[in-house]
Amino acid sequence: MDAISAFADHVVRTGFHDLPGDAVKSAKTFILDTLGVGLAGSCDSMARELAELQGTWGQLGEARVWGNGKHLPAPAAAMCNAYQAHNSEFDCVHEEAVVHAMTVVLPVAIAGAERMKGVGGKDLIAAVALGVDVAAGLGVAATTGLRFFRPATAGAFGGTAALSKLMGLDQAAVVNAFSIAYGQCCGTMQAHTEGSALLAMQMGFNARNAIIACDLAARGFDGPKNVLEGPFGYFTLFETNGAPARVTSDLGRRWFVTELAHKPFPTGRATHGIIEACLKLKRQHGTQIAAIDYVTARVPPLVRHLVGRPPLEQMSANYARLCARYVAACALLEGGVGLEDFTPQAYCDAQRQALAQRIAIEVRDAGDPNALTPIEVEIGLHDGARHTARLDVVLGNPANPLSKDDQLQKFRRNCQAAARPPQSHTVERLIELVDRLEEVADVVEVADLLGV
View 1 (cartoon, rainbow, N blue to C red):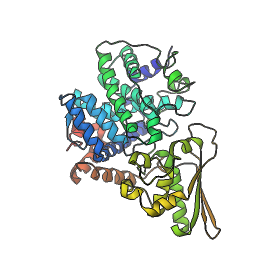
View 2: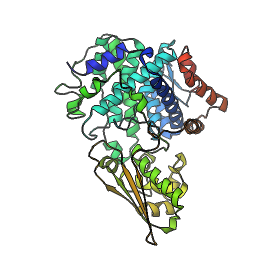
View 3: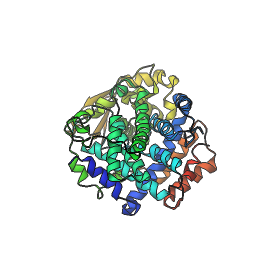
View 4: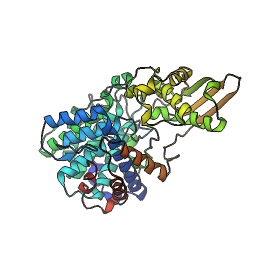
C-alpha cells in the first residue's frame, strides 16, 4: 500500500485532544510567527500587484489578504498570503526536512476557515499540526539533496492535509485530495538559483492548488492512489529514493511542529549559521572592519549550494537574501541583519561590497546531503591574528530557541513593516488571541485583524 494512505489515516483520525501540550504550544508559537511574517510580506510591491491581479480573476470575497484588506476567493487569498509569508525569507523552517512547513499550511488553513465560518481555534491548531506533519514528514523522508523546491512541493501536501482536516473529508477523499494536489505540484530550484520572485510565488501556487484539490475531492473527483511510491510518484520524480516508511511509522508519536526553527533574520536559513558566527566573533573580539583581511565560512555542501552565490552591486532582494557573503558583511558592519538591508542603496554601498568580496564560502562535507550544520567561520586580521567560531546548532532551532521576548519583538516589528501597519492595540490583540487560540470559537475573529 502506498505511504499516502498512512498520511491520510493520520489526518482523518487525529484531533486536537490527541496533541501533546508541547505540540499545541509550538503550533500557536509558529502560527503567530507566520502571521507576522505574512503581514511584513505585504509591503513587497509585487505582493500588492498580485492581490490586484487576483481580484481580476474572481470577485467572491471569501478570505482576506493579510496586511492588504482585499477580500478574494479562498484559493486566491491563500496564494497571496503564502507568497507574502515567504517573500522576505523570514518564515520558520524544519531544518532536517529543509521545508518551510508553515508557509503553505497556514494560509490554506486560514483561508479555509474564513470561507467555512465557525471553525474553532482547536480545529485550526489540529489542522496546522497535521499539515506540518505531512509537509515536514515528506522532507524528512527525502534521502537526497533538493532537485525541486521542496518547501513548495511538500507544502502542497501539507496544505492539503490541513484543509482536508477542516473540511472533514474521509480517508478516501483525503487520498484523492493529495492525488489532485500532486497533479498540480510545482517548484523549480531555478528560481532559487537566480534569486527570482518566482521562488515565493511557487509557495503561492501550491497554496492555491491545495484548496482546489480539496474542493475537487469533496465533490467526488478521483485520482491515482500511489502518488508517493508509484512509478511516477513523488518519491520517483521529485525526491528520488525517498524512504517514507521511516516517517509514517512515527506519525502520532513524533510531532514535527515541535521541531520547527524560528528565523531571527530575514534571509535564507542556510545563511543563519554564518551570520550568527560572525556576530559571535564580533562580540567576542570587537573586530574593526578595516582590520579584517579575510573571512572564511566552512559549511556543508547544501549551504554552499543554496547561498554561496557571489555578491553583486545590482541584486534583487530575493538574490541578496540568499547571498551569504552579502548578509555576512551586513552582520559584521551593522551588528545584525534586518529588512532594511535589502534595498538598492544597501547593495551598492562601497563598504559592504568591499567586505563581501573578502568573504569566502568553502565546503566541508557533513555527510548528510540535507545538513545545514556544522558551520565554522574564521576571521583573519591584517596583523596575523585568527579568530574562529563553530556552530552545531543555530539560533532559532528548538535546541537553541529564541526567547519569548525575542519572538514577540520579531512579530511586532513585522506587523509595523506591513503595507498597512495595524495599530498597536490590534497587534496586541492578535498576540492575545493566538496565545489562547484553543478558546477562540471562530478563527474569523483572528482573520478580521489581519486585513485592517
